[in-house]
Length: 112
Image (cartoon, rainbow, N blue to C red; front, side):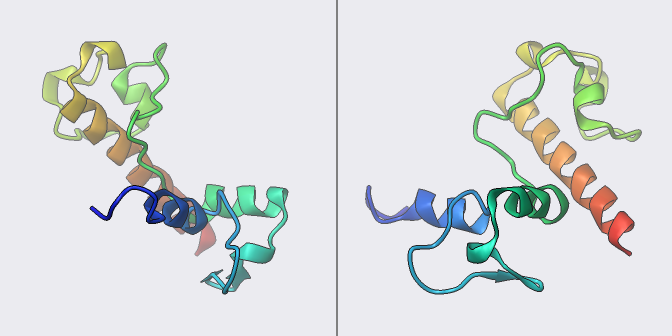
């Protein structure tokens, strides 16, 4: 809610290991995120960070169920077999959140 140019997007990009901080340090677990090369940052994002994008980034050729990869219902009821273009904005957002949660649970289970 801060004014334009105050650094909201920059902060989110740094926290998501998409950008490196200009100053200071950012540690995530044992990783000094600002010092990671592009490949290591990509691995970190894949294993430790879940994104929910404003534009949802669902694959249009897949059903909601295929995008989310969850065996259980995600509050979309009879919409699970629909494609993203057939869903409302709120339904797209729920599908994207469910996908992020699924990926974070799967990654957490693998790390244990």
